[in-house]
Length: 142
Image 1 (cartoon, rainbow, N blue to C red):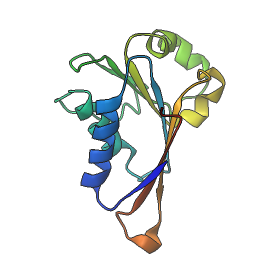
Image 2 (cartoon, one colour):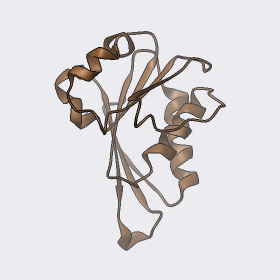
Image 3 (cartoon, rainbow, N blue to C red):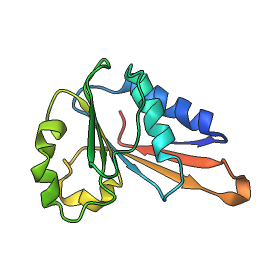
Image 4 (cartoon, helix red, strand yellow):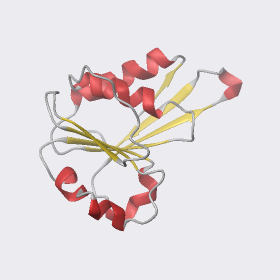
């Protein structure tokens, strides 16, 4: 399925809706070019999980963990990962196979370690349709 948003607020709201529906053990793979709204989407997703505090992209730490929502939330940003072995160093398996929800930005960089069943989210811009236009595709969600 795919949706269109025309503002950061709409992108946030879509993330919030998916966060409301998220279940323990799910892994969301979030992909899109720089500046497409992945962080805004993730902030909405976290709000849907009941996380009220600030949520920022963990670009330099790879993983940010949030425990205050209805489920543990593991937010990965693997944009700067040099080698998949770095994921082992941070204990990704505990997150992937734990009782929380994972959201992984730039997941295509670690495809070889992703479980078979993930939920793929792709955010695309189309400047012909406006600066804030986004096409958001969700695949694999039941």
